[in-house]
Image (cartoon, rainbow, N blue to C red):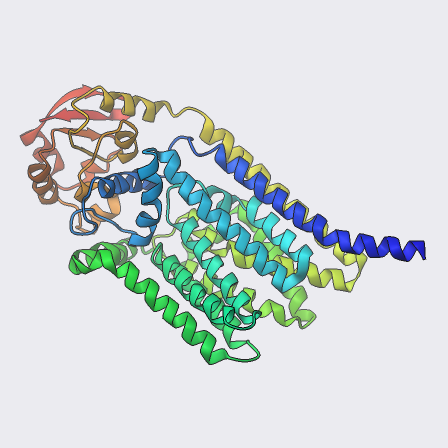
Length: 473
């Protein structure tokens, strides 16, 4: 009798222990990410987006004045953080909060699909995933978009499993979250597939659920269209044409995209997700359908995306962690030996992620002497309200100086696509009375005719490390 009572108490305690462990993983994730908020530049995009938000904060309208290659949702979601504290750390904190919401949504989804243990498995794998960890404090749209996508799928599943009026409200919220995910980065549209599968799999009220989700999505779309209404042609050129031309110019074929998929530090999670899917399919577990479809459509998107970069692999993270969670739940049903093997594989995958994250943190937290020199040089010249041109937008922003809205992005892709010319430079120079140029990494030099144009209007006053030059008008 005493043994039975003890087992009952242990059974009641286990969910609490697992939930507490999941919370501990989330807290550990937040603490390690917080250390990175003031780290040095981690991607070229950070400088571009930092200057973009600075331009919005001083009242320049998006698209008609401020160049933006990402949808407006990303910038307006982070703008309030910048208005509170003018720093890169505040913007990264906004990214982190969104990614924490995505982590919580991953736990909810896995728990609904695979129980308490599945929830812990998924949140552990997502928190230690090298690409998700990286994207959670980088000023890029990928992490926030994926987080909102995951929230949207979680809301859809909660809607299906909820009764009464909350059902419609949750479905509408799922559509709204999906619209915001797409409005942050277009690849958020991938989440429409798992949402549709979840709602079509409902036992009742499918049409009503889908209608509520569509209405929520339409509302989100209307909100996102507000910044576009004033300059639809400019928005189309910046959001659509710039990416299409960049993709045409960077057409390396599917082989290059596959090479990114098989990055060594991502292979353990990919393999674990695949094994989890196979185990669940063998056991005919229907809960695998949604995450498997999500993984497949995400992989198709990655293989077709051009130009692709390693951080785009974050798109696979939630579906892979859910597949792993479902696989572990099925291994538990097979027996203790299978469950023990699954647990070892999960811990091993998480350990690889922690090792990669630790290496990245140590490398990123080391001083960046070059950017420190660029920042100090910019700060030493001119007045705080002077405008600069630069292909090192991060250093200019770190020096608390502004780049005109139309020229926040000087990437080589825009130059090659014919979307950045000396005529653009000249028009912007006149309009903003630009007095200074920091030419640092060669992107400005690749603009056809730049050298002749810059010498016609500016003169070099200081040479810096790495071949960087500061010009004054």
